[in-house]
Image (spheres, rainbow, N blue to C red):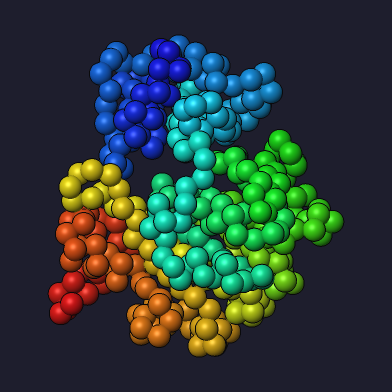
Amino acid sequence: MNVEELFTSMVERRASHLHLVPGSPILMRINNQLVSMDGPILSPADTEAFSRAVMNDDLLDEFEDRMECDFAFSVPGLSRFRVNVYRQRGSVACVVATNPPSAPTLESLGIPELIKNQVSESSSGLVLVCGPKQSGKSNTVAALVNYILETRCCQIISLEDPLDFLHRNQKGVICQREIGTDVASYQEAFASLSRQGADVVVVSNLEGQESIQQVLNLAAAGTLVIASSTAASVQVMLEKIIDSYPPHLSQSCRNNLALGLKAIVGQVLLRKASGEGLVPAFELLVSTGKLKELLRENKIAQIGPYMSASARDHGMQTQEMALRFLVRKNIVTMEEAVRQSSRPEDFKKIMSLPY
């Protein structure tokens, strides 16, 4: 199994992921569907050989200790790859994700102007990017970071695990700190931020009360924070943040959210009806006086209807609105939209209404 040929094949086929599991052929995820490649069934020796070919001695030691390892690297002239090596049934399995060698642009991803404005016009506050796994969150964050680097004279400190994209300094300067390589943990990285003079902080994989609290404090104190997290929708993201706090601190969390939140971008990726490629559907929430009120009063369930009602005045958009547009324009099928919707029954009701 030639490692370089596998990576080249991924890029040529525009595969987002490569799956190597003993007892299975080589699998690639193309247009969000797993496709079997021609060739023999993989043996445990095959997958172990692949893992050893892509890991250095330090990573091999980490894998032996933890029985799992997550890392990223670049192949010059080809792409950047993120690798997860893990054990199953006593053997080694691997998943490889591919990213372009350079960050995408906002325009290439179709990110709405509303979010671009939130980033360009804000010197502080929290911008969250959420979605299910494999929904393109890393690409969206990378495009936002690249846009800031192009347009603002500022310092960005990015906390990542691992580094998905390697940004270059432009009008702005960026320091990318990989957890486990450049700093021991997110906690230590947060602790040193006050001494590093960051105008913008980027956090990948925002999880847990401690990290969420650090991010909210930074946003409230005058830093622009861009963070990504796994959540099916904007409302689920808000609930996830609030539920990470113990009950006696939930009001404090909602107050901090009301104070610091600038916007949330929720996204899913859908297969195009043509069968050629994927298209994102964006859910958009921006901060307003009414949103602050709903957060403080713990009326999270009312935020979805408020987003629908605020589409004209504030440019907000629910997931159902985004999916309906794609179906009406024949960009995606109804079946695909229902499959990707976080609230399929609500979406079906909306589709039955006059456009």
